[in-house]
Length: 302
Image (cartoon, rainbow, N blue to C red; front, top):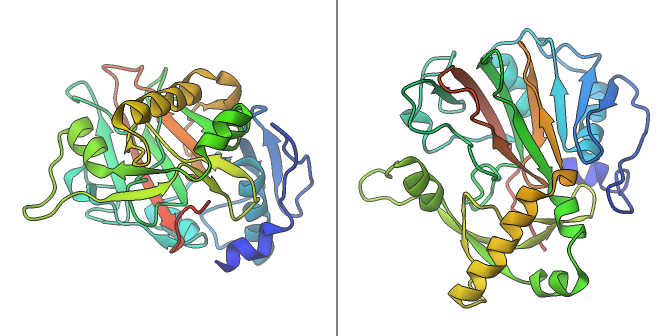
């Protein structure tokens, strides 16, 4: 948790849809949308980064939630080395069921190949990655290895704004509620994947509204892919409230930014304070990707 303590007081944000327009010491940052997202230049991720460069990146991810690094000629080991600066590398339960990564069989890399014979593509719904874990991924780092000529963007939504734009009475209802995040809902119902014999996919209870340790801001932490129900409500009430929140995230373009992939791009995002959606608009073209993710030994808290 030292990463959070170091930057907590320096990155507090006041107001709705406000991001600090501050200078960084070692990088250049260009905003891509009002809600979130910034392109970062001045770094070569194939090399070791200095303490000053890492400090600037940590400030920038707190400020902008999604960072885009273009023209990075890196390999899987470079991607993993970069991610380790932000936590312990995550090993996805489905990694072995997906395509081999460019690193061969590597449990720390979640790889997928979407093509003309694919029944689904990974991430084709608004979601936080693996929110069913007791300690969900905090940071995700994605490279797209093969991209269609047209399409295949990734959309991101700002969960600070999703919460802050709700009415006060609805905020009062949501504060203090919890929700169940179920891996079976996402992976069995969504992908047709089954857990190993004698095991089940994780299901975990998290707060509906959490407070981010980096900024102190409240954010909405429910998503359509993983969140099954709110146990404090009846099933009908839970379905109604969650349906309202899912549509709230989905329909408000003002919360969102859309990232277009170009060759040799890496995207790093805050997986707690954002949701994302991989847009499958390129059939029958192919799209291959490799994700490395990091967790910090903690979970969202009210």
